[in-house]
Amino acid sequence: MNGFGTQGTMLTVNGVPLDRLAERVGSTPFFAYDRSLITERVHTLKAALPHDISLGYAIKANPMPAVVQHLAGLVDAFDVASALEMRVALDTTMPPTKVSFAGPGKTEAELRQAVAAGITVELESETEARRVIQAGERLGVRPRVAVRVNPDFAVKGSGMRMGGGPQQFGVDAERVPQLLKELDGLDVLGFHIFAGSQNLKADILCQAQQQTVELALRLAGHAPEPVRYLNIGGGFGIPYHEKDSPLDLDPIAANLETLMSERVRPNLPDATVQVELGRYLVGEAGVYVTRVVDRKESRGKVFVVVDGGMHHQLAASGNFGQVIRRNYPLAIGNRMEPGVETATVVGCLCTPLDLLGDNVSLPAAEIGDLVVLFQAGAYGLTASPTAFLSHPAPAEVLV
Ligand SMILES: *Cc1c(COP(=O)(O)O)cnc(C)c1O
Image 1 (cartoon, rainbow, N blue to C red):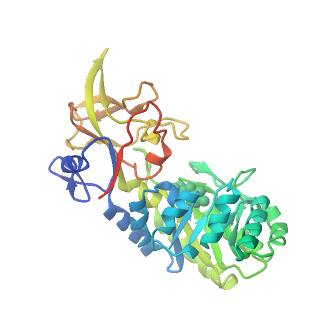
Image 2 (tube, protein in one colour):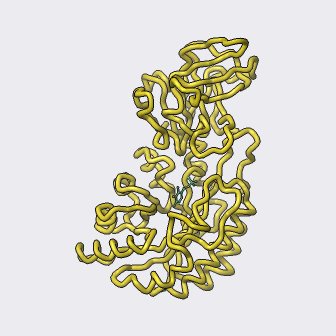
Image 3 (cartoon, rainbow, N blue to C red):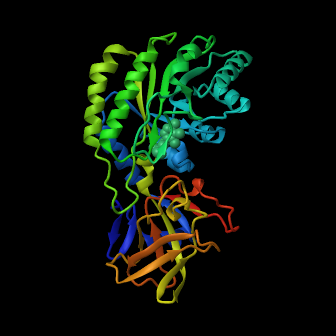
């Protein structure tokens, strides 16, 4: 279920054999991101989606500067969620007008930085709106903003719900018309509506996109100026587990084309519609590579102990918001062969939570082998508790 190649029984990352790559990096564990897989993913998506849809990358999925630089040449926009992510985005060739800043709790200092940079601030509350107006007055500029709307519908089947019902994200849809009257001094570009994350069901995503567009059309009537920006979120999921099927893009692309031609282009002719994705662009392009430091048997059960763990790749241990722990795909990268035994792969942390693969069918792993965890390109290193147990930080490479 992964796009990585092999040479003989050796896994390759963008054509580089894993053992050579490990020598090149010089130490394990490490994260490796395959640039050709990222490029391929963006090209596939752009070929499928309507030509006038803008594709944004949510940097929090993987903020490694080299990855962000690579994506700057591929996607149309970046979404950042902190001042440091903003700096990484602005270091690339992406124009500031194509960078947006979302997320609750933006401080006055962060908002001043964003306004000074000329990026688009996604307003998450009435307080934030007042702060941005003040920042604009202080700097003598007209800040670019969009209103992040907490929709009046919820999306089922999302790994993480980020809209509908009471939320810390955005302004409740029913309060948006009033807020729009209070935005003097701001350049109100439009709306950002993001309902949820990690969805693998095309029909549910299509329904969410339709409801999002209808909500935006209703709100557009209250906007001080024609809508020029409509960020309809994303939520495209990737398969993490054996039983997950990859998202079927075709119905989503067809649905978007219908929405664009029947609803958006006639009613909001000035609007650029943006789809904003994180994990879908980078998640499957990354591996977390660890080395076997011990192999032991305990009362009939084989344990393969590696030099990495949940402190670098929390999600694979099942502790990053998952309700039920299921194994992430993993392999012995230098023995890409059929399994001959059932082994449990654990990390090097002194806690039973550090479980990377529970009863996995594997080739006989030996000390020194390279255990590879797939689907590690998004919400990996930066979403993990790296200080827990005080081990050194892993390297990250873009290959
Ligand atoms: C996190 C986030 C995303 C990206 O979510 P993925 O599941 O990685 O695609 C997109 N938009 C916003 C506003 C986010 O906060």
